[in-house]
Length: 155
Length: 171
Image (cartoon, each protein chain N blue to C red):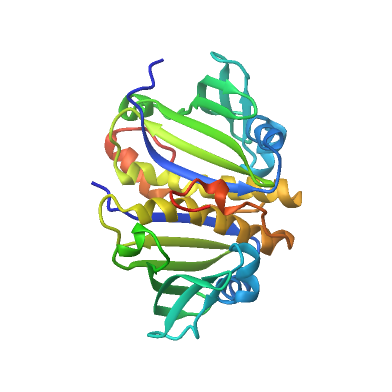
């Protein structure tokens, strides 16, 4: 049995430093992440939250911050809905220089079997990471409404 | 061919600022694939029962298969068999399906690699390394006009696992 996790890899024509900034700065995240702020001081042990249009949707604690190589935080859905009752999971970003590119590996793990949260994030991350790649390579984020993702209870 | 026994083992979804017709064209035509797929030429006879092939840059046949479903520009399913002696005998047929949907002003492309028997993560690691690179480059090509130059190391974990099974792999 494979453990319940989501892994996503993408290659982006950028530098690890710019990608790190895009992952940790609300100025960037608002553009590729449905107007979501990524709020933290990015120090190990500090709180982390996602704030979408002024509402905190997800929150956690910074577990690792090694700019511009590795970032991880715990992740718990705190907005309304059933997934809010699931225990915190863990998000890890690994940034590796790959020639003139950066290989970005996102691992989201620590889900219980049958997690609804896992289903939701498996639909959400590809759209967010795709839009981030577009923004860094072309200067334009994608225009994909959250409702187009068919996430249960969203949109 | 009965595909009811096939289980999806690897799914990769990517959103592209493009149109379904352009994504379809990029997936099925050699002039595009050579740019984003390390010089490999995709040849697709676009009808059910048509031939599907991927040729290496030297012209040799690397992957061969048949078109199982063809609904442009929405869905293409092909058998995707790497031409290494003994591979299909040991792993069974590989089924690759592309689904293309409009999502807002962008396109959602979902690639599913399915098999008719359980395969180890070691065997599946080859596709899991390759698909993100190929489809990241396809996205860049369609959005910026330039593919990515991704120098991939050989998929050693998969090659070693295939060798253990007795498949003749180029090492």
